[in-house]
Amino acid sequence: MSSAASVLAHRDLPLDALAQRIAEELAALAALSAGVQSALSLCHFADHTDPAAIRGLQGIDRITQCLEDLGRLMESVSGELTGDVRLHAVPILSRLRLHELVSALDPEQGPIQPPPDDGEVTWF
Image 1 (tube, rainbow, N blue to C red):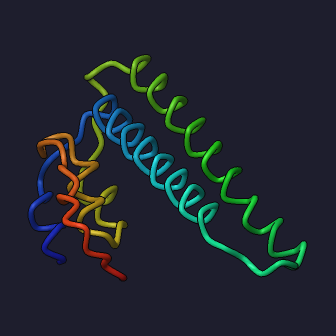
Image 2: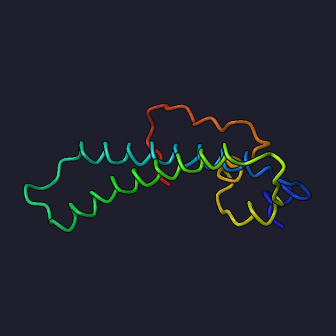
């Protein structure tokens, strides 16, 4: 059992709170995607850039818009749900690979604070 699964064991998640956390994560991802789009727009490309590459970069805008829409949708879904619908935590959250995402989506965890911007660039 993973460390995330052991923390989640024998708990149920309120579906309305989970949907709200998903909405918040989607909004954060949309903002991140918009930031990537903005950063790329500041890059200097060759005088002639392949049209296929330009279309690929324009796909980032679609990703951003979809994430924003999905975030709004999940926020609406969250508002329509009652707190009495609960899901088992382990089968739901143990499917996620990113520990930070498990923490971000777990309604019992406090809000995840982004790391401070110290000006350093960190590549994954």
